[in-house]
Length: 124
Image (cartoon, rainbow, N blue to C red; front, side, top):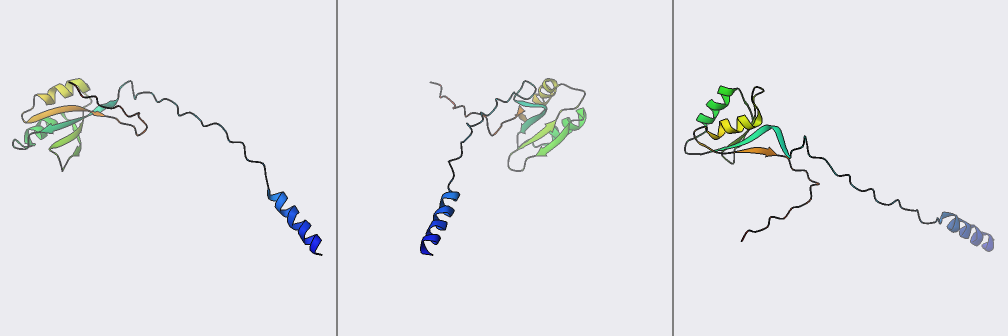
């Protein structure tokens, strides 16, 4: 009986052993293409304004050209806006650069979490 149990135990152990699974080679991550050939939104701008002048002149300019406020930042003096359909992004940027109190107008850049890290080199 003991021999029978030993044989059964060995058969169970041997039947549970398998050859190691062959692993497939890793699939390379495909290169992504820039969105519409650019790395910024084709419709949005980030506008910073002087806190002492306030945002009233900027709000009036936004209303005048019928742009849309996407976000009014609380921690910084700035807004994200969507350009009006009647203007190009470049024309909208140029328009807001001449509004009283506006400190800077920048394209709303798109950053992907899988973009390679590009170190900023110091200029000497």
